[in-house]
Length: 90
Image 1: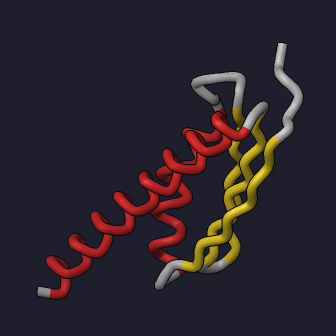
Image 2 (image 1 turned 90 degrees about the vertical axis):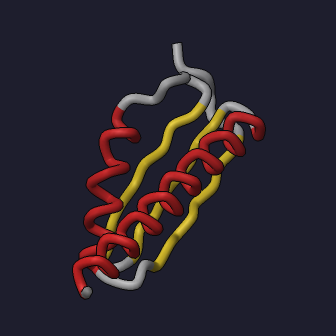
Image 3 (image 1 turned 90 degrees about the horizontal axis):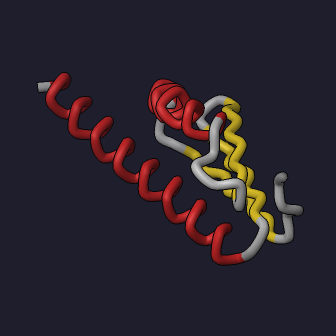
């Protein structure tokens, strides 16, 4: 049984290019489809260069953990994308 959501957050991240936002969206979308815990749920949407992450959680601790995880993944993916683009450009 799913716990009622008591904590919410929406984060919008504007990335440098639509290509990068598409790559990050495709990397994170599968993570949102099955949550490792019933304490939080995340939805991700993409509009142009902007990603919108919507978090719902049963408590602020679960919300903080989910937000931190997704932000770390985005930072990691952004860093990897930047390094790959630098290598591609020569």
